[in-house]
Length: 275
Image 1 (cartoon, helix red, strand yellow):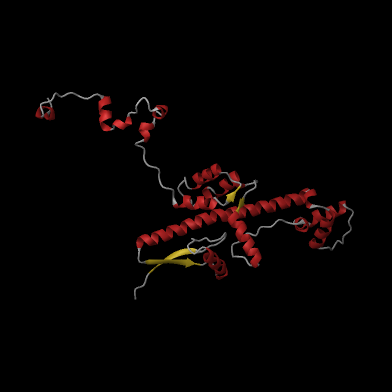
Image 2: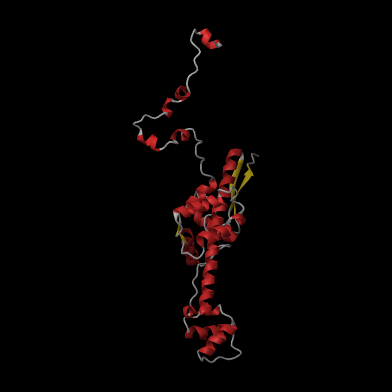
């Protein structure tokens, strides 16, 4: 007899495995009427699974900003996030920047409403911040201006359009633009397509930069709150940009920079002086 069984005068009978499980958690064994449990044989193990981790600061910022992007599916956005944040180092864009662009953004129609909004604001003001991508689609003259002088002369020769051997490139492009639509000239159409592709890549770069920089600023703000005895404030990229930052903060006083695509405002902490 064991010590406890002899103490209470009970037989020392080892309970069966089923009885042991039942004693630990009777609710872990479903009734036969509980069809959902029997359809899912692993439910008992999930009851003891670790709780899901809270989304990272980067994931929260990413989801908020990517909600303003059209042309990329929700499933694709989730995959992009897993590539960037799942590898644990969103700061190192060399690991994912071109890879994500090639897989999800290149050669497909997509738009970012936040960029479109500020592009219109800058255009109306006639002024632009330091780091800015200007959305533009070349017209016929601009398209032919992208060609080389030999290419322009060849086009004019084919169309029997006279020109002076000393004509400058703008003059040749103007003559060519009156003769052709750039869409009908493969060399010019390719130049325009390459221009638009570079523009899309630059806008995509601003998008990822905005998400990364806002995450950094939120982390600085949260760290300052934990430390205490410090105050957090903006460090402007340039006086030229301050006009646009103040304009954005007037609309959204509690927003965390970057406040517009291309904004480089950094939130910095300094020790509070009690003198």
